[in-house]
Amino acid sequence: MSTTAKTHGMDGELVKPDWPSLTLNELRALFEQFPAFDGRLEIMTESPRPLSAAGVVRTTRGDVFVKRHHRSVRDRVGLREEHAFMEHLVKAGASVPRVLPAASGETAIEIGEWTYEVHEIPSGIDLYEDAISWTPFRYAAHAFSAGQALARLHLAAEGYDAPLRKPQPLVASFTIFAAQDAPSAPEHYLDQRPTLSAHPAVRSCCRQALELLQPFHARLRPLLPALPALWTHNDLHCSNLQWSDASEHAHATAIFDFGLEDTPVRTMGMYDSSTHESSPFHPRRSRSVGTAPHNGSEPSSVLSSNPAASRHFLLRYKLRNSFRLSELAASLRMMSSARAFQKVRYLHMPQEHSSSA
View 1 (cartoon, rainbow, N blue to C red):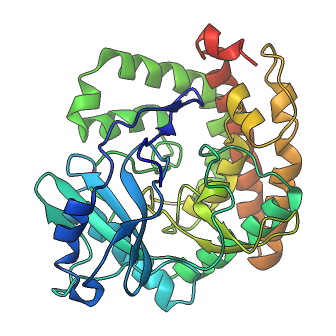
View 2: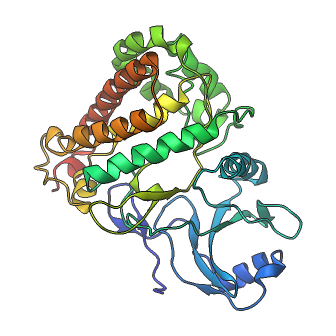
């Protein structure tokens, strides 16, 4: 394994990671709490994801996936929220990796300033390992299979009842747009997050975004009362799936990385299935997965590959997990909002990013 760790930067380039890489010394200390894995350890891969340090570790009992978070990002309580939902999904037959408990039964291990979790390796291959989050699927068949995987996940999630996750970084939710009074919802959101609330630019961005998206929320609002709440993944893109093989007709075999999971007042299932329409269209990101070239001046040249994938994704979701009419209508309206949001992001992208193809 290379000792020069690289991680995905915000502009699509590989950069030096913010967090130190996993080391054998710290892994030995961690695995002292997992006596079943006593023996030689070897770090096989390092994940390029930027928000934690993670990788596949070879043990005498097989490979496992170890993820380390700074406690300011994920403490024990925050990880337990994720693990409880994953445990429910496993028991319901969903294809998600098990989180392995230490000898104490604890799955979120705090050592010093870090919080660790150890996962089994799910079946399949990490086909999109090097793809930056939310880049498009390479083939329509992959999107079709991902829609089926998400439908199965939502079916397995039914009946899971837990409080909203505590305010913490890196949790996705639909609480603002799911509110009947969306303009006032950000105030409650920010009040729970003092660091964000104290930042004038954040409040300014919230106001601008709500002004631009208000017409789309007005179309969605009448449908909100009919939509049920549902715990779900919130981050289901191509690189959070394991795949059967590397072919055009590969199918998704497992879903992982539940760090953004949550449930709002309502609509989370629709939110999860609609966020595929908001795949990033940064030129470098799009090129990295073999989509159409981008001339740096008009987002539609890159977005042109997404609607078909979105249709395949939603079609398979609908076939596997029948939409109510209100759910389908809401999903289509949320897709319109996602497209608008991405165009806003493109227009506010720094010029050097939007002109380098």
